[in-house]
Image 1 (cartoon, rainbow, N blue to C red):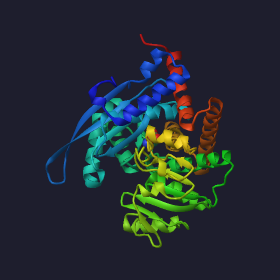
Image 2: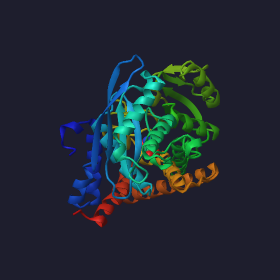
Image 3: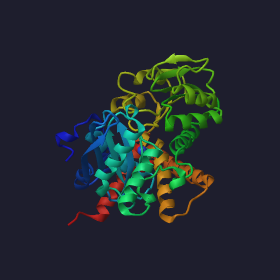
Image 4: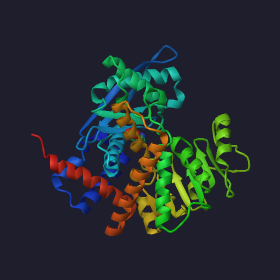
Length: 420
Ligand code: GLU
């Protein structure tokens, strides 16, 4: 299936190369390996909506289930101008490895709608979300596939999805999506979960390397849900947040940026740019400044063959999905840079999504302190497992994390066997 032209995408080629490399290393049964290379199902839908100007706009949407061997599928929904079937399939595959690595009872899925959410009004976004939900309704459900926010989507989008699904069922079904607003069944701490998880794994990485976070210089690419939370928490812990960027560009002050003040600035100005006492940088330059830790928390393919040499940090924590290309990964590895890979580093989001789903199914909600403590435990355990595999096998952390994730899915296939 992934050999078909519809799936053509750089991101999927990368995901498949990673899978092939790791499957060979693990000695995965060739029949199981072949199954892992293909998504279980992929749906492409047209989404016609009434635009504010009275005309009909038609958008393209996708939902891909990579595998269901460990449970129902789980994964975000992204709204982006260049999203395509291959990219969504690659991201669904990554969700499979991520969920398995974190010990969650889920297979991987992903969804996407090709659109620029910043150019749509709120009404248009609502129409788009509701019609998309209606078009994929046969593929989602609390024990079938559970979407969540990703690039370009948020709590409000999840609320519309939950409402649309619930209307067709004639009852409220909170477990159909995660990342919902608190009032309608969301979980305490879900919004902060990905950023918080990044901080937990960074702490573990620093500990293993015999370093402290306090006083370390950090650059964060992206000031969305992931980057802003990670920056705020690290700043509170005494790290020097020297640089931050968003869609408008980057800012730099080697003496450190007051993240609380920056948040107020962003609330007014809509961008980090223009924050007092900072130099202006581009989104690329932010990755190349003299600092200890870089957190790419924006979009994919930011550290590439052409700039990996210029990354000066010795720790990279991947907040985004796929921010480092395969070629760049090899360069960083050869230079001795510790890269905490996306499937581990940004897994805090789906871990608390799992907590939200469990709470929703039981109609029993936990305190934020309980969620944070459980998140820390899951992240720390997963990090230590990955570190252990990397040490034992003599590999980098990405290979070790993928080995852990892929091994579990492959074993699941082996145990369940082939139907019929
Ligand atoms: N979109 C997030 C990710 O890439 C979260 C997915 C979820 O919570 O299901 O991991």
